[in-house]
Image (tube, rainbow, N blue to C red; front, side, top):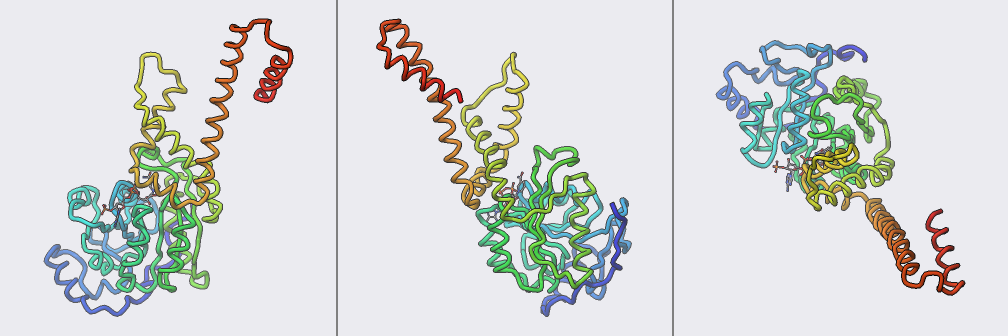
Length: 349
Ligand code: NAP
């Protein structure tokens, strides 16, 4: 991994015209007398917890100011790791209920999205549910952010947010579509070797600072040992339908059967129980999103159904053969016996 920030710590862009700068500052001063003053806010530098300025984390990574939109399970999961690397993290969601957990994680929390934007995070990570993202993006006050902000999404489907963001996000913003292919269960401890898919959907490649910022954001995952996978959003959805969606569907089906641990669990059965835990702990909304917003998912579901029917048929056909044998014995007409043998050969292929 490369070291630190190749780009010096300067403002990436001027903030867009906005009239409540002074109000925000006075609110902030009330909240924390030690916080930065208004003039200092004009740059993308931010104070470290100790009140010092600097762009490097203890691990030599470039310190970023990251804003998380949607502070649910996954937003919190990412925030925790970002904070642990020394990045400044702020978050917004719909209610105040996240204040205690944000405080515990060292995240500055805003239930008001305008206040969140006025903090000018240099990277904004969309962690909202797949189903709500369109609505959230359509009413998001992008104009209150800096004109040059990196917008990242982490949705578990990719073609949909790519199209949505290209359509709705102001042209000056860079767009990075990602899918960290793990969650609070599978990535509970280390992220070593876990896949992190990304697609630089819109990047001002003329602007070296933009490239660096994107690079520094991806470095967060690289630093944790993730397997970095550059891939188009379209290819992601094609592959995810036959991997991730199948995994979640099987997990959901087995979860529905309320399987229990026994004294004679085999390794295979243990892995099924783990699968249930890894998939059913996610919200049903997430699973529904995998189906609804990936056009390849319907075909996968149908293929699974066909395969289940074929497997079941094979079992029952064999059973019928045994039964007939018992009923008729050697007395079955030759052509029936032949048909059965040929059906058995086909099924065994
Ligand atoms: P989720 O149920 O998919 O999303 C929960 C988040 O969506 C919460 O922050 C919630 O906001 C927000 N939300 C839901 N409805 C909303 C609405 N109408 N308006 C505004 N916000 C709304 O659960 P999640 O596990 O936290 O996943 C978040 C995102 O990460 C999803 O897009 C998912 O695909 C992606 N992801 C998840 C995992 C995982 O393992 N869980 C892994 C990779 C990617 P409130 O907090 O305000 O209710």
